[in-house]
Amino acid sequence: MDLRRNENDGNSEPTQFPAQISHLALDIGGSLIKVVYFSTSRDNCIDCEGESSANDTLRLFSGNCKHPVLQGRLHFAKFETSKIKDCLEFISSKELHLGGFQHHENPSKDRKFIKATGGGAYKFAELFKENLGIDLDKEDEMDCLVAGANFLLKAVHREAYTFMDGQKEFVQIDQSDLYPYLLVNIGSGVSMIKVDGDGKFERVSGTNVGGGTFWGLGRLLTKCKSFDELLELSHQGNNRAIDMLVGEIYGGMDYSKIGLSSTTIASSFGKAVSDNKELEDYKPEDVARSLLRMISNNIGQISYLNALRFGLKRIFFGGFFIRGQPYTMDTISVAVHFWSKGEAKAMFLRHEGFLGALGAYVSYAKHSNDNVVCNQSTQLPVSASYAADPNYNPLSGDFNDNESIQCSVYAA
Ligand SMILES: Nc1ncnc2c1ncn2[C@@H]1O[C@H](COP(=O)(O)OP(=O)(O)O)[C@@H](O)[C@H]1O
Ligand SMILES: CC(C)(COP(=O)(O)O)[C@@H](O)C(=O)NCCC(=O)O
Image (cartoon, rainbow, N blue to C red):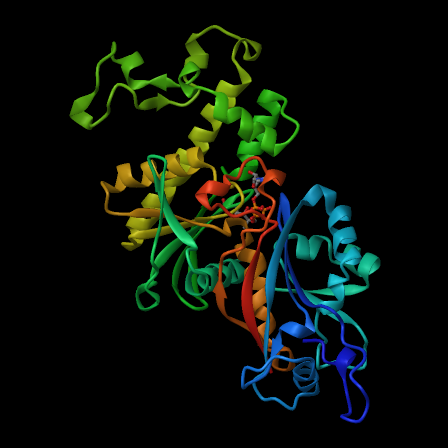
């Protein structure tokens, strides 16, 4: 917490409380900047005994209470990394950059540090300094992905779910039986991490065929102007127009001896070889669908192989490639199910794209005087405008960036 702005010697009136206190954390990735911030109003502050009044806010900030608790909300936002200026403006307009912390090694220097992860925390450090006057306190990306996933799995109710044949089912997480699991983060590229506990993990694999590949190739092949447009297009397509199926190679028959039905894709985009057509002769929606399926299937398969390497039964998928898309999740789930013969389970996370940013957020807890720990979150944010994002289905309870999580923060 930024204690300095609220210092009170106990004699003067507490007249300078901000309406809102924010902790800001960033994950600046290859494609998207993810923003997480905590906000509360003084009405929401409670003390150790659980009372709630404006004076508790004073006790909170003057440090008279040993275990003050703030209740508030975690907010989420994302920006394209190429539009980083929009992100800077957003932070500036909401004054989120004021909610960082000070390094105690150097308190005389009145500089704010903001927790940040992802490659952009290095690449854009100067830009943040110049525009907002803040330093980015860099946290390792893998550390943050794991911390964010563990936080969500332990603290957020109805966070993980399976998705098969169009059916979404929330998974009850038994905290005593969470580890080990495989975390697959599908961002621009893909990281696969074996997680054995809090801060105990190993990045066991990765693939360069990820979300950036889908969006990059898709843009070139379909001329779509936005990722959402490409997704929307893929909903309308039929991959069979361009994928080569087993039956097309085997004269309409299954290849049952090796377990392949006639409708299994033998070769993604394989038909384009023999069709003697140009790109323009294919419908962009069919191309988009085939591409989405190819990449999702490939990631599902590599994930399974890595789970197999380490005997892991549970695979959690995160990253903004997923975007709560039924077709993407179904393809990944089927790949995991098919290759593991039902032994391994693919699971998805509602806050899929915010693992790194949440991990950076919880890392504020490392700083003794800025000890922030989210202890519990309940999740029923129903006020968000789903209309803002046509790719989320409100009825299925998918997460929307405009939503927030209610949570408590211990400030020591
Ligand atoms: N609005 C969007 N703009 C660009 N890419 C998006 C968008 N929404 C989802 N994506 C997908 O998410 C991927 C980035 O995922 P993310 O987890 O944010 O990774 P990174 O940290 O590399 O930015 C992109 O490569 C793309 O496939
Ligand atoms: C380099 C990265 C960790 C960066 O993370 P991202 O911005 O893609 O989320 C990721 O792109 C990645 O793991 N790529 C795959 C590299 C590989 O293992 O081949």
